[in-house]
Amino acid sequence: MSWEGKALFAFALTLTLAAVSLGAAQKTSPALPPLSQTCPMHPDIVESKPGTCPLCKMNLVPVRLDASWMCPVHAVVIESQAGTCRLCGRALVPVTVSLSWTCRGEVNAEFLEPGVCHDGSPRIGKRTLRPHGNHNPQHGGQFFMAPDTWHHLEGTLPRDGLFRLHLYDDYARVLPPAALAAMNASVITRQRFDAATRTTIEDEAFTLKPSKDGKSLEAPISRAALPAAMTVKVRFKPDTPEYRFDFTFRELSKEPAGATLVAKRPGASAGSKAPVPRPPAAAAPVETAPVYTAPTEPLPGTMAELLSDLGKRRDEVGALVQKGDFGAVWVPAFQAKDVAVALEPHVDHLAPQSRSDAEPALADVVRTAWQLDAAGDTGNAEDVGKAFALFTDAVARLLSAFSATQP
Image 1 (spheres, rainbow, N blue to C red):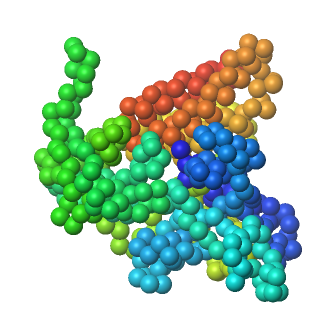
Image 2 (cartoon, rainbow, N blue to C red):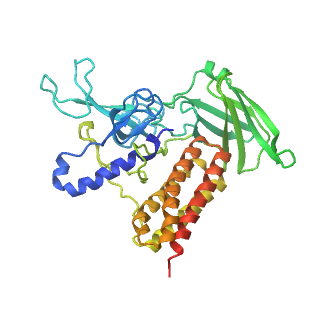
Image 3 (cartoon, rainbow, N blue to C red):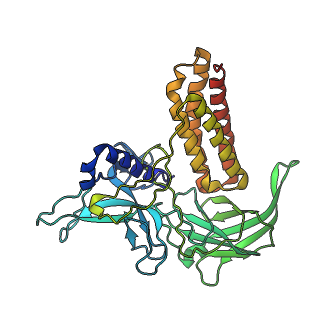
């Protein structure tokens, strides 16, 4: 799974706090995004420390991840702040990029620091879109990443009686018509669970076929009352597994017309969540790596408030799961993870039995929050439900351990 979609903006916000402590000096020399470590073969593997790739065992290499804004139509337009595309006027969308510097006329010259070239000229900053760096829906639908971590897809309901599936690669580029034609996909609009046979019976299923323009898969479907839940099953090639994606449409999908869409925050470790930052007040050159000024949401100050907030986040996750808004469950799940981490110092003050119960429960809250995030990315309702059940159990055990010693 791509961790880049989760905490990059948190990196920028961390740098903001550092900038405050540095005072006026920071204004003339802004801090750079911190170095992360990534696999040369599997760019979705991003770690905070040097090591080897868990998939191919290659040595990780350093990279600087940063937040930028890109045109949804012209991918060559990548800016350091929010705004509109200089080519078509559409609103830029937030993406993840790698930040580097080059020198004119020097072949293969790429640096992770600004500086001076051999000819005395300053190095030129460059922003390069990262794999999984763009998780913005392009047609007003729901955007998911396939379990193979390469294919991405967006389901839309452009009008009553029509379902459309847009397919992308790991850079959110539209797949060619030949790739769509090789897929075997269907959309299920009505299904039920047969308790006697313990199987799911598909009462209404429609084959998805390439559209006339060859840019998507689509199928005429029965009229459905909103909100409408639908399941897509797709096999990208004849010899690949079949994947399941669950969509819930609360309204018809609308093509974006200039509104900035929201991307997930990238990151390099099991770090912290942060709200999407406001754009900087003015453009900053790449060489100074702009620092964003949006404040993080503060955690409660007392143990009682932390416990109350943990329950609140659990309920928010549950509400999103109930609505089928799987792509958003990671936000309150990560907030719950942060609350659990903040509770860790209080564990030492619990009674021995309560401490024995709290320690594994706290670790399970953190672990299941990441499981919820991974399940939400793939849009599989069954997997999300299982992850939510484990998350709820972990939260309940942690709350119980602390309440046992409360007056």
